Image (cartoon, rainbow, N blue to C red):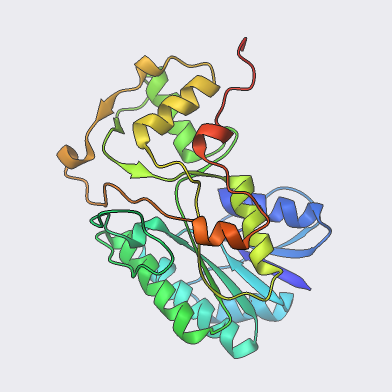
Length: 279
């Protein structure tokens, strides 16, 4: 089988491509501005706003499955309409679609965790775009997987880790919120779980997030401690006071999905544990 990774040059996409390559799977990937690194992956330029370009890529790769790991942010034409366009094309061609979505589809107003049965109620343009794409995927592509995730962390390469280092160094303004709760996941766990879902016969909605619900400041502290930085250098604030829209406590409950998976989704307190105390 051939798997096409849409958004393969991004942080998650690069890890998906790396794992596919390592497993000896026939892997193709797309990029918007420049291709990713590494051999063993065929790269194709793709603009999800362009229907003709999308069909050109599908004709060239003839994928059995597509993992949509693209990130267009709040740009409706990419995140919402591009996701819809991809779902329609996958359905027309009989291609299995794994659509990576976000906890941003939830408002954070629920009194408790969000499980796979909860309906989206977004409060931001990005969340609304992701929710619209989800709806199209589920309506148009009956065998598709919608995989919602949370903050994606790595071993130094994620935007959240870069932010912590910049704040600690005083090279960037901002604050880490003490009232903004998410369930971070390690990029390798997320990619492994997505490959597991891709290679299975399953369909439906899955939650792929870590079991630890932490504030952004708690997450920053864990990153700083792992990397030998002084956590006291990290400025704090409250999102509720910032005027920035978005849910405050968005606790993504992945327990039902975890029972289905062989891949273990680690929590932030585990995967950010400092390995070398003398560092």
